[in-house]
Image 1 (cartoon, helix red, strand yellow):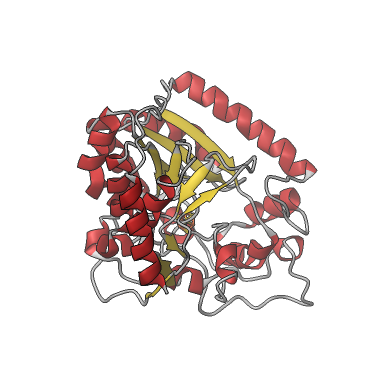
Image 2 (cartoon, protein in one colour):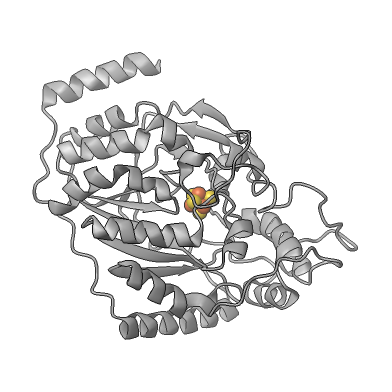
Length: 376
Ligand code: SF4
């Protein structure tokens, strides 16, 4: 049984403030508004999100803008990136997880990493056409591709814009394998198409979770599906014949690590065939925001532990860990492996890259020309 998380407003400064990089003198004032996790939890959720919170009311104050980038596919050879290439039709993410490392990329768009990241959503209206052009380029080699590795491809905007759906249709037509990564139950909208793709070895879904505690999830990932809705999503996808895995991302030391075994067991019971995990990373750009969240929502011992593990400057580089955190992460890895062995995950089947067929050259060129006309 997981103890219920009881968020409590702080009455004094967090011990973590200094350790996580707050060098301002004196005791920081708890924020009166704009507290991470609380600001969007006050917003109603659209019923079509099927995220499990069952609220009604007005509309979230989101703004959408067109991302005119001509690239839809990103390649990466970074060690901490499990996917060699990924597709992200959206920049910014309304799900608003406080720990989200993608926040840093919003700075490059001239927007703030906190509320702007969650409410100013950029989208690529021609994502499907750009993808077709990319896959039609001479020399393109088919390899498993992720959708949603950077920002969630089933965030609320997808209900209306259906850009992820468009990408899936191109991928299926060209028999290109894909892994979807999401915290949203909206992925069930595409269950039938995914089931057809899965039968050809072309699709699998990873559901990201880090707690079974709805109170904690509400303040940590304010607009993601409830933990129960995510388990229900695993079950529904699995029953449709779609290989599903669970990703414990991120495990937060002192806060969610106690749930590793219970979460894995619940995911397996729901039908997850594979499991993986990551440990919280705190790039420098996230320290102020995370520190503020701790001040409001974390019990003091958690703040102390995180301060000790992440040190004054946090974990600066990608995948780089300080000594204490390195040791803690190794222990977590051992626990995770042991739990997986005990529970018995059969593993996700390999994706099929052998049936890929590039789009006809003429069609690809026409669409490229069409694209240029639309973009400029
Ligand atoms: S769902 Fe993923 S991309 Fe969206 S805020 Fe959460 S961690 Fe970031």
